[in-house]
Length: 259
Image (cartoon, rainbow, N blue to C red; front, top):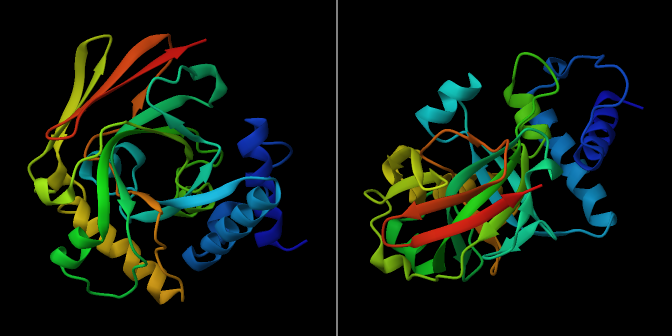
């Protein structure tokens, strides 16, 4: 079994088993970025064969806060899968995740197929059906040390799930620049930052995603969900709490984490 197939099998197993079985050799740094995406593609294929459904994409490592937290600089993409899409009001168990952590997100529902390398802001806004507040859930664990872009890509951006709020807002009502994201634990504000921290704004992140897919001969399909990244660092969840995300013009989303 070659390195790409071996690592795909390991990351597939680690997602479900919540642990890395057997040795860490050869080291993941032996991969280049293109090969890391080959691993991600194979993991996605195995998850679909296991009964999951690909429902969209995420862009990760998009803000200075995350760059500092991970020690990495380059944005990456990952996939979103059902049944790991949760609705507002659903109670979650933080122990179901490896070092559970969250990020606040604008969830973009895409209303038409998109491809191209330099779509304008107006083209992007017209292609977004609606925007909802969201909470991305992570397995905040790098199995290899130190953290690397290769592992972040192989793991699909350490993505573990997404909670989507009920509110649906027209993209024409948003600046995609000035909206402030806030995270509260049991009513206490723990972090905040404006949307402009996401690669200069979520539309820039979306444009980068579409360009990336186009260059791979793919398109962003109608009805996909996209989370373009967060302006704040990952917030860890290690006890039962009420977690609230607040995004200007999108409102609030509360998730109860229990065990």
